[in-house]
Each structure stands twice: as structure tokens, then as C-alpha cells.
Image (spheres, rainbow, N blue to C red):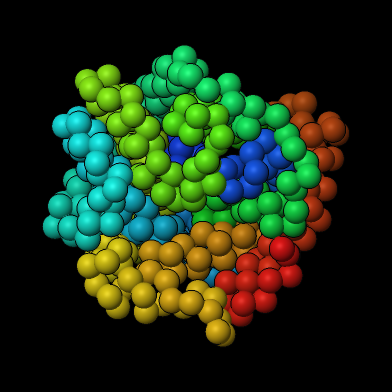
Length: 465
């Protein structure tokens, strides 16, 4: 552990791991999923999945990482199951693909800081033209990738931990400030009602399916990020309580992000909540229109603050996404950390270029990929990669990690590792619940999620409507 470095404190680990979970999935993805899922009913199902399914898988990933002190590939080998290392390799590939397009979206957000600061609220109507300007938005993405690289290059305690300790409290303060402001606007309470008062008549199989996928993705599970972070955790750390705190932090920030955004939509829509189901364009199209409605210097300040907040959230995740392949390169390929960071960052930026080009600049990368086969429709490269990495690989990875821990490595070994630093764990309700979830609940639910996603995304067979 000494040669690899490690987290210097419990707070540092929790802040970094929570930062890995908190990102665009919370500030960008969660609100539009809630909007499309009918509001509060989606939120209830999302919260259930976070604690019933995601918390046990998170504790398991951290335990595997700490036990082996290795990256997601080396961890399976170190436990004596080299033939399972494909699960770790799959997770690393997923992380690389996710960061490649995540950085493009983060670049858009970074550019919106400039647009909002200059009072260009009309960017909402020009979003298509904005994304076509690949020199400008590519430059923003490059700046964002360089920022991520410089943090990761400084190592675990000197880079990732220090950045997380600064970014996470700042992020929370900024969100709370935006919540307070949004609640003062006319019709804000209509937005809160949509968000907080469940209408379970809106629940259907599709809403439940999307809530499960959102919970799993938002907590950075299935790609080995938490195996990687776990490999730097002190053996005295209580993994179970740390995983619970990380889950609470992620859920809490997603929840207050909704309290920030839906009152704003209530304000803009005059209480009708029209635009709440606006999908991914909610952040880049709908909200700038709201900031424009506020108008003047106040609108510029609010809009700029929001996109600074979004970039902070994105950076906490891009750091963890880059750390996964970097740790693999250091552990398995024996590349010096500094060189590994620049090498992996460069590769990932290049992999992201088709996603950058796929929003109107290149017809091929904008339309030539089919995610729904046969008889489906063309889609852009970014959405295609998201379907493969986010929607498909992550649930499969989570399913395999849970099955491995319970049925191959065996529950008694998992429990022994989780009991390190948690003297009250053995024989507790938490142990029984976690064992049941990892043994049966997680493999079955995630396996079903994977199968349904493959059928829907690639064969146009929609069992859930």
C-alpha cells in the first residue's frame, strides 16, 4: 500500500468516493429522468434501489479493492481467480468509453459558463449550432480533460483527495444556495409538488426500469471505480458505514439538485410543469431559457453559478473515471504514474472525438449508428456508446461482481473483509441484508436489467412498456 499511496483520512476517502458517484448523473441525468418518469413516483423507486441494491454492491466493490490492493483486473487475479479478470477488463473499457463522452458533455457545460457570464441566454435556441462548433467545444473539452489530468497526476492523497475535500463542500454550498433562490420564485411550489408528492398512477415497468438504471449509474458501480478507490483504503476503515455515507451523499445531492431544478421549471412554465420531461436538453436548453427569463445581471449570475456547479460535479466524476485505467496501467503494465496519467488521458480524449463530431458536424457520426435493431433508427455516436457502456456493460459488471463475491470468492471471505474495521458487523442485520442482496437480489435484478436492455437497445424487443 505504501508504494501505491492511499487516502490519508476517512473523510478524504468518503469525499473522493462520493465525488466519484456525484456528477453529471446527479445534476444533469437525475432531473431529466425524474421529469420523464412523472416526478415523485420515480424518486421513491430510485431511492429504494439505491439502498436495497446499490449500497450492498458498493460495499462489495470497496471490500474487493481493499483486500487485494489492486485495480479491477489485478483484484480478481490477486484473489486467485485470474479467469474472472475479464470482468475487470470490461469495467475498465466501460470507464474509458464513459469518460470519452462524459468529457464532451462536461466541455459543453464549461462553455456555457462563458455564455451565461456574457448574458448570451439565446444559446438555448442555438444549442445545435453550438455543438457543431467543434473547435470551440472541443477546446472546452480539452481544457476540462487537462484539469482532470492535473488532479489525477498529483496522486491519491495529494490530488484526488485534496480536490474532493475542496470540491464536494463547495458543490453542496452552491446547490443549497441555488435551492434557496429557486424557492423564492413565483410558482416554485408547483415544481416542488411535482417533485415531492408521488402520483403512483404514473408508475409502470418503464419508470421502474429507468429508476433502477439511474440508481446504478449514478453511484459509479459496475466499472471498477470503487474497486480502484477501495484499493487505497486503510484496513482500519469501516467499509460498511463508509459505503452507507457515500450512498447517502449521492442520494442527498441528487435529491437537492431536484429541489433546485423543478422550482425553476415551475417558475418558467407558470406552474404547468411543461418542459419537465424535456429529456437531456433540460439542462442545456430549458434552464438557460429560465435564466434568460430572470434576465439582466441577476440572470447572468444565476446561470453562470449553475454551470460552474455543473462543472464542479462533473470534475469529481471525471477524476475517478480517469483513475481507473491509470491504476491499471501502473499496477499491471508497470508504467510510471505520471506517464500513465498523460497516456490514458490522451487516449480517452481521442476516443471521444467521434462523440464530439456526432452532433451535426459529421453526418456519419451523427446518424450512422443504430442502437435499436432491426428496423430501428439511426442515432449519434455518443448515444450509441452510452447505450453500450452505461446501459449494458455497467449492469452486467455489477451482476458479475456480486455473483463472484457471493458464490465464487464466497460470502465468508467477503464478510471477513467487511468486518475489518467494523467490529459490530458479524451477526448484525446489516450483514444478513447485505449477504442476501449480494447473493440473490443484485445478481438477479442486474441480470434481468442487462437482458432487458440488450433486447430493447439492440433487438427492438420491448418487454417493459
